[in-house]
Image (cartoon, rainbow, N blue to C red):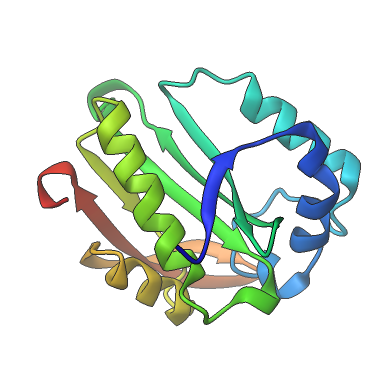
Length: 170
């Protein structure tokens, strides 16, 4: 195993801030994260994740080299989509391209499908983020289509791609 996912601890905030205070990472994430990302921002995020309903939010630190190098989470949707969940993730830039994120995605999907009634996990990476799309494909996700002009990121209208993994495919 090249990485491990585990529940967050408040003491992870400094390593989280180090990983996330990087423009190259934030350019591939949704808006709303502070930049630079501080240790206090990490404490606030971790506190929020630790206080959520454990059947609705599955949030983990990604560990490698005995430290926190990123974050991964699966978040249940509501109403008619209550057995569907959205996947989100990132790792520190120095760990890109090493297969770590693919392994973390496989681990969290196995965990969520085993511990909950979720039947579908989906992800919507920006279409320009080829590396993230490859992670999902290598983890067994199916490409469902392109969501055209689906977001505004850094002042540009961009496409996103839809990927999903079904519990029956594990």
